[in-house]
Length: 380
Image (cartoon, rainbow, N blue to C red; front, side, top):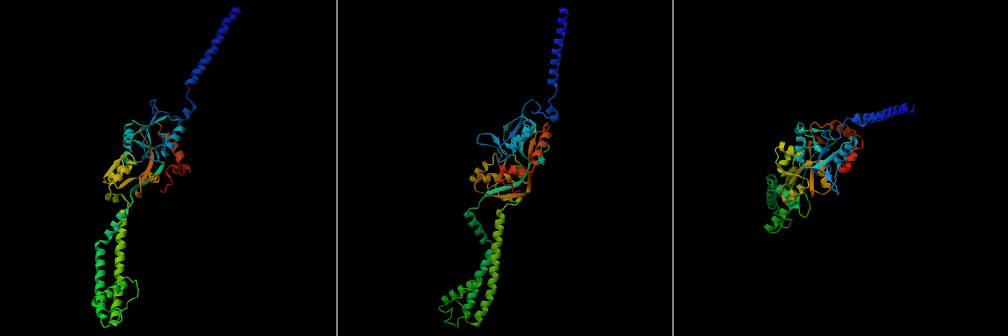
């Protein structure tokens, strides 16, 4: 009986072991619950981490003191990647190389690009997460340039004609007054002919400019009549002169301001190579010196190669607040809307999920305040 029970025990043991092994195989082969819910590969589809292209573009992308990549766009991307469980590696390259990399598929994503219809067929974009617009920084006017501008106003043909008319009118009025007051040798216009002419000229200038010192007045009725007409003429001439000078100063100030791309034709402009502003300037037919980094433009200003630098408002205001461009003035280009988004190579399987997470973050009420922690106040 013992002999018959041994084979039965072995059969039961083998059955138990087989059941355990089969359960383990089934569990290992079954997909993970999270994977079933998301269906998102954590790599680029070839088993390697996503290649995220980065370049220096503060406050969106830049290196901190420890050499790690940080910024508004980096923080947003890393939050999305953590939510989706994506693995990635940063690859630094110039902006124009980023565009080529996304087009060729050698890199998978860039977290800071401006939407462009010209690049829509080359690679894809996510939904935008920040709005900006074009801007231009120029050198502050020095005292010498201000004096030079005012000198140019005074040498304007219209101003010169009115000024000559003033002088001619004062001389003519002085001669008439000297002739009319010759019968009063002890009056305000007495003395030698030179003295009388000098007194008349002084009185003429005081009357025309309405300063009204009152130290001299004509005594004869004819002199007073002449003075009355000169008062009227003086007021008119001064009004014309003031208006002409004010008009020329206003035009000179407007020539120094920048309100549209057409105004940039008066400047030697710089921009970031491969940027949206680079393509806009090329479309407008405006030649530009191209730089890899925004800080390189400072050398362009110092060397005199450029006297204006075009970019987007958020980046330029940030650089000016950080004093990385020097003492400059900033002007907006309201006819150039710029929308920041992620650039993604064609066919990236994670694009839909990235878009969903990006919208979940940027549509929250606190997104603007989060962005302003990097950019400073957004006056857009």
